[in-house]
Amino acid sequence: MTVARRATKLGLSVAAAGAATYAAERWTVARWASGPDEYRHEPRTLTGTTRYVASADGTKLHVIEAGEGPTAVLAHGFTATAHHWAPVASRLVERGLRVVVFDQRGHGRSTAINGRFGPSQLADDLAAVIAATAPDGAVVAGHSMGGIGIQAMLAHHPTTTDRLHGMVLIATLSRPVSVPLGRLMSRLGGTAL
Image (tube, rainbow, N blue to C red; front, side, top):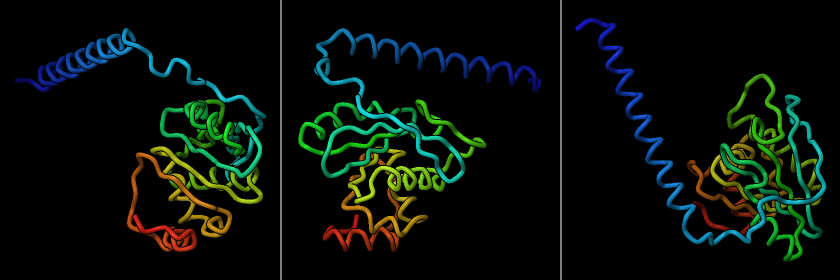
C-alpha cells in the first residue's frame, strides 16, 4: 500500500471518528435539553462593577466585582468565562461577601499577550487580580485551570500567601505539597492534600 493511500485511509478514519463523536454529542445535548431544566432559575451572568487589571506581561484581564464584605476571588477553568461562576457568585453576594471574578487570559474579554499561556502566566494573572482587587486579602477558589493558577501562584508568588485567608480547589490537578502551599495550609490550620 502506498504512503498516499495509507494517508487517505487514516484521514477517512479520523473524519469518520470525528463525525461519530459529533453525532453522539449532538444526541446527548438534545436529550439533555429536552428534559427538565433544573438550573433554569440560576443566574447566567454576574452583574457588578467591571474593570481591567494589567498582568505582569501587559495582558489585560477583564474583572467583575460585586457585593460588599470579605472578598472571594474566583478563577474559572479552561474554555469558560467569569460568568460561569454566576450561580455561585450570586449566592456568595447574597450571603454578604464581596466577589471578584475575572476572565482568564485568552478567555471572554481578556487579552492574551504573545500567545503565552501556562502556569507561570496564570500565576502572574491571579497575583495581579488579587493585588488590584483584594488589598485586605481574600479566599481564592479555582476550578480546573483556575486551581492550577492558584497552585502556580503559590509557587511563583510566595508572598501572596500572606494575603490569602483560604483556598478552594475544585476538579483540578494537584502536585505534591510545595513549601508555599504547606506554609499556607499550616497557617490556616488545614491538612495537606
